[in-house]
Image (cartoon, rainbow, N blue to C red; front, side):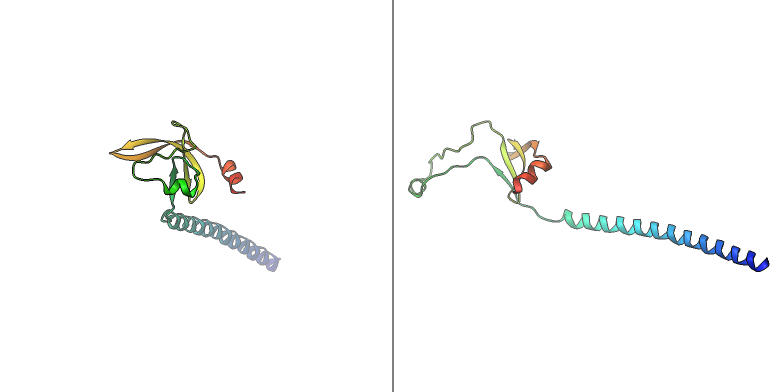
Length: 123
């Protein structure tokens, strides 16, 4: 019976050690994931994006384009007071209104396009 007790004790020690290894692996795995996630986010925060604010559009013939000169007025399809379209890397993401900030033009976001609508716009 002594040998049986020693085997039982040895199995308990192995089970405890395995449990400790499992806990350590979970801690190490979650720490690694957090570090990788943080590194990934830090890396992404430095990515430059092109933001475009569209006041309106117009279609014209080459003849009409060539007749434009200084002081010419080009009529746009958008009505006065309509929201401006905001694009990031050519994809629509929001709408807003023009404001003046420190004697510069700016845009106040009034509507963020939902992720579902953005996905539909990709097709």
